[in-house]
Amino acid sequence: MASSAGEQPQPSVRIGDVRGSAFSIGGTDVSNSTVHHGGPGAGAAGPTAEQLLEAVHDLRAALVRLPRSDGRTALDTELDAAAEELAGADAEIRPGLAARLRAALERWAPLVESVSAATALAALLTSFGG
Image (tube, rainbow, N blue to C red; front, side, top):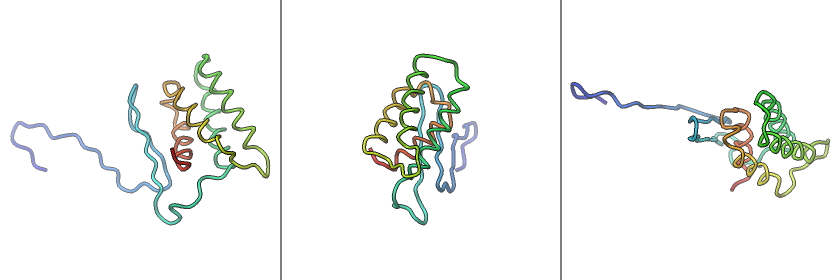
């Protein structure tokens, strides 16, 4: 798009092809997470308990680098409870777990907004709907 003399070009962002990934755009007080479910296998069943457990562990590990706070302690407790439910060879994702984790991420969004592991977990949780 050509601009007239003296006009500043408008900023733009173009994201080509994103497959099986999640990304977050934004900063303090504004964050937009996007998940792309496309290509072969799109519409297939959601993540496995093992995938969800790995995402919970990744977020738990990332939280260690944040300063201690009441919010972090509460989120740690919620993530530990979810990890217990998901652990074991025959573990399954019980009804309500995804909603609980989603609510925890929303409740402590200011705490985890810059933690990429939180975006990855949120991406998995979106496949459960809601």
